[in-house]
Length: 410
Image (cartoon, rainbow, N blue to C red; front, side):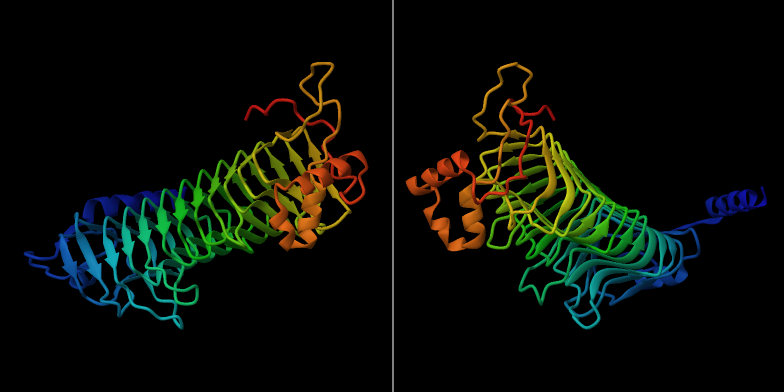
């Protein structure tokens, strides 16, 4: 009871004694740095519109910083603009532009260090090395921000939203483009990435490493250099996302490497070089996804086991499934394959003949990529027909025993 009363007393104090500090051009307090120096716990600072070139601003007290429309902090390509290290700090409605560059110190427009309960809302970050860099922080929310970098090379460009060693973060409704990785998670747990749009980044729209028990949902990852990479993580939920137009010799909708006990459901993979590339992954459930117009819908390497693919729809892919071995330890059930030409005599909507989604040509291409030049040739059609009649190269156990006659209702 005593802690509750203490919290209520603190809230009452802050409500009663917090102040609004108006700062900026035409005000008695002319600079943001001076306003931050005057602020006390619970105060709000309203920064009037204009362009401010004050170097790095350090926020350590629990305050709310709000910018009017067209309020700009300009780093003149020299400094980090805002450093946050504290708790209960909110930054809203400010444009950060031209922050400095330092690969040694990972300069960022907004850097959050050793903090908790931070909210970054409705800001713009333009032309920064790292746009938003968060480390060792609990309960950080980054939402409704627009982040646009000026991409150079992979080595000279930082990440858009970068989190390292964080817990319970929420990354929501942001638009990120023009960075090395749009969103980067490393050692981040119990967090949610939702309804973001990450596109035209040099490497990955989302890069996810050593991060467990996270969920990403409702995002769009489009036209990124290599798609999305999820590596060395477990208990990850990926649902209702769109992976589109990630084209290139090493591009994927999702690259899964050493992932276990995770779920991929209700996603759309459209026009990617490879929809899902899976390596060293186990106990994954892949269901109710749509794969359309991809080069390869799914590549499952022989190092994967105990994964289940069910109730997915495959339309218009050059190759539905490919693998690099003959040993198959994964299960395929009740998927719809537009290339399936079996029949359904008992009208139960399940094909009476099992379907082998790996073609002989896919196996040949896997071992000799240059043979892609023969794609859609009469010779390839002849080989695939012969392989269906007398299987010899394709994995015998990679089979959908009950393929759907009609597309699954998702």
